[in-house]
Amino acid sequence: MFDDAFTAIGRDGAGVIEVAGRLQKAFASLASIGDAAMRETANHHSRLALARAEKVLQLPEELEILHKLAEFANPG
Image (cartoon, rainbow, N blue to C red; front, side):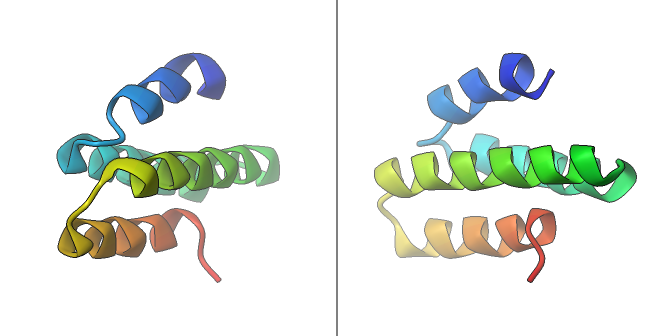
């Protein structure tokens, strides 16, 4: 499900802070409601989406926002 639903969104929306941010929020929600396997998968996809966004977003302020959102999906 994660690969089918989120990989294309993360790839195609990487350069749009609103899409990248909502995606991180979705991963945080899924990580918090699922079992260990769901949490691990959500964390993995959160990191992938963040890495894609880091390659295309240019404003430091947007990257800072995205990093803060990604912390919720990947605590610690």
